[in-house]
Every structure is written in C-alpha cells, then in structure tokens.
Image (cartoon, rainbow, N blue to C red; front, side, top):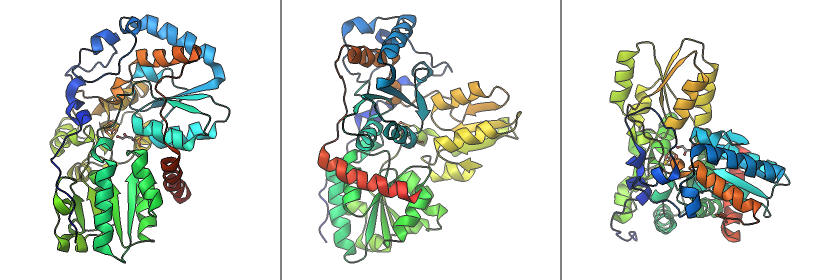
Length: 402
Ligand code: 13P
Ligand code: SF4
C-alpha cells in the first residue's frame, strides 16, 4: 500500500480568526466599517471613501444603487448574514436553496451572493454562463471548506481506491466544499449533499458502493452514518496530515465510512454542558441543534436538522414554547425577534457569529452595487469550465435524489 505523504499540520487562517468577533454582549449591531476593520482579521481592501461612511449613509446609498439596477440583478442573503445585510436580500435561504433560486431566475446579469465563497462558487456552477456571480468581500471563506484542500483530497482518494481495489467507494461532499472537490466527486461516481438531504444521499451511495468517503465535515458524516445504523467502529477519520490518514490497513478495511478530518468552527463551540445548563434554567425547553455539532451534543438535544428545518420547527411551534438553539447566532437572534410569542435563545452564552459570514459588512454590499452601476464588476467568482462540468454532475445527482 502506498502511504500518503506526511504534511505538517496547518490550521486554516479562517479557523484561527473565528473568535475575532466574539463578544459577551448580545447586540450584533454593525459599526462603521472603519471601526470593524480594527478586528484582527483579514478584510479585503476597499476604496478609502467607503471606510468612514456612517450606517445611515450606507443604507441610503444601497437603496439608491439597488433601485437603479432593478431586475438586472438579484441579491441573495444566507440565513447567517447580519440583519443589516439581510434587509436588502431579494431572497433569503440556505446555501442550496439560494443557488437553486438564482439558477431558476432567468434574465439576470449578476447575482450578489451575501454568503461565503463556496456558496458563490456553487451559484456560478448552477447559473447560466452569462450571469456574473459576485461575492462582496473575497475574504468571506468558510473555515470548514478550507480544511479540505484539493491536493490532499486527491492523495486520499488515490490511496483509498488502491486499498479497496474492486470494492467501490463513493465520494460524497457536503455543499460546504470547494468546486474542485465537488468536481472530484462528480468525476468519480460521487455526489454532493446538504444537511437536509445527507441521509438520502448516503442511501444513494450505499446502493452503488460498499463504502463512502465523506468530505469535509466529520460531524455531519458521523451523525448521518449513526442515523443509518452504521456502528462508530466502522467509521474512521482521515487526517490529511498523517500517513494513510492516521489509520492502519485493518482499520481501513473494516471501515464503511471514511470521514475527512474537518469541522465547523462555529458549530463545534456547542457542548453537552450548555444543553444541561439550558435544561436546568428552563425545564420545559426544547433543544434543537444543527448536525454540524458533535455527536454527543446531538445525543443530548431533542432534535437536529438543517437551518431550514430549525426555522420551520420554531416558526410552526406553539406560542409560549421555549427553544434553545445550537446554530449561528445571527439566525438565532433573528428567530427570537420574529417570534416574540416564543422564547428563543442560543445555547452558547458567548455571542460568536460566523466570522467569515460576518465579513459581508453592508459597506461591501454598497461598494459592489455602486461599481455595477458604473459598469464595473468587482469580486466576480468564476469556476473554470472543466471543474464546472464535473461539479455540475455531482450537484445534479443530488438534485435527482431529492
Ligand atoms: P446550510 O446548508 O443550511 O445553508 O448551512 C450552511 C452552513 O454553512 C452551515 O454552517
Ligand atoms: Fe463555514 Fe461553519 Fe461558517 Fe457555516 S457556520 S460558513 S460551516 S464556518
């Protein structure tokens, strides 16, 4: 067996920067960009005149710039975006629904994707070639997606296919991954999933092969495997920094699921202790968490599901019910505001927005809209043709599973 090369462990900069916006006060109100630029993270350079604009000037100018562009463009807002950005979204949704909506709307010149980099790439793959997809701040990545680099994934894939020989292994990648990884899946009989269809996608894969390689979130992969009755000792973690992913040949041969060693720096903040504290303070509380949380947190919660499922469950719940939520704080705060008849709060007492989503400050939205009005496309996200072709194969397989 050829063993993958040893690589020194590296932590994505997006992971290191995750805590930069954490605070103990509950307000997430935006400050001027000049103030926010003081947080110790990388921001994309923006023309100086934008940095000192006051919030009300920004709002007024966004309204004007947006109105001038009319139906030529669409502004998409992920559920984890700040309220000051969400107010300008023509459509609000999860990563998958946003891209699907953009692809189904015809006649657009540009899509302004207020989300993170992998989402804008997916929108570029799914929309017609004459639509420009724009990410207002190019530094808005995703720490989980950054944990799976295509070179490392290719090495892993080569080694696994050699180990398993004629026994088929199906690669599944979570939507939160680069287009290059979606393309590798498309090219090798694999598929994309989201947190709302991961179970169905696993079933699809096991109808076609004996094993699954799941990228890049080990927690969503493990939680889905357990849901399907796969024992934990038949799931191994593949570390890109260790020979053979840190596994013996015997372990790999016993494994039904190989989980990439990636995680979400926001959802791994949730703990069983937080669940117990919430239950202690609110004896009739319902605990609902996202499946990117670790397995013990899911086991301690009452329910788990995608952002869409969390929103639907709380929206449809009876007045007077109490909800402790394990997902990104901007969404939790918005749910609390939209449902004043229910008690909705975040499991984590520290207010820690997803620091990459948070980089879409309204001033960046203003900058790209005003540039469009001047005939300039800034921050276009373009996936090359070949990558696009195979990524689309993997995405279309997922669409057919739904
Ligand atoms: P959704 O797929 O629900 O949009 O979630 C994306 C994400 O980044 C969750 O952390
Ligand atoms: Fe990525 Fe986690 Fe932020 Fe989602 S919440 S975009 S998975 S870092």
